[in-house]
Length: 218
Image 1 (cartoon, rainbow, N blue to C red):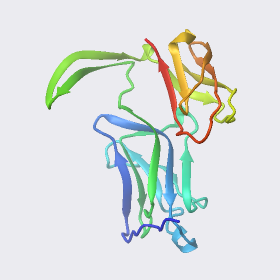
Image 2 (cartoon, helix red, strand yellow):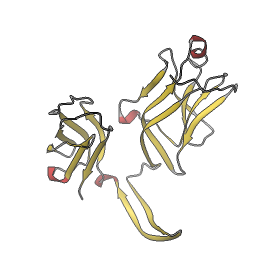
Image 3 (cartoon, rainbow, N blue to C red):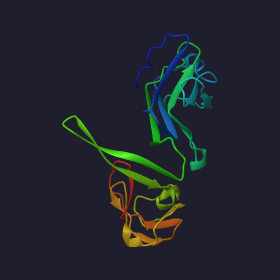
Image 4 (cartoon, one colour):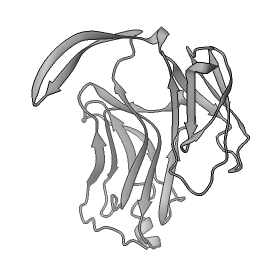
């Protein structure tokens, strides 16, 4: 079992930031705790909080460590896309000694431009041997962009044969345009509408790395 890292500060911050004009939209945070007894656990429960901010000054508390805290991996999930937090800065914060003694932190989500307009224009650049050249601008139009909102079911059998439905917006209805792989295994598409896409999972031998890829031609 990993030892708990030393943290003797009376106030601590442990987190990350995204680049300027970008935010991280996250669906899950998990953190690994080393061996700890009841005395050490008391230094974090109802004290250590996970927060988000867009200016690195004013922070919003997203959750607080509670009595479910335990040695090993701990999780906090946001179940729907509407609930996913979107901030440039994320941190664990505590105002007591040992409140940030965390071994490892993992975020699940995407990094995206901090803009919710219906369209967005950016200038493409090519960098060759350190020389930057501006190219033509690229327009992103929300109404032409597929947007994945959820999938169901979230779990299936390793033998495959489960029907998996992705729900979202602006999906093409031509099933031949899709290539979907789960854990590197093909999931053939059987049906598609503008809001749902359905595929059938294949068998999963062994313990491959967990991945999901949805490619749409065009």
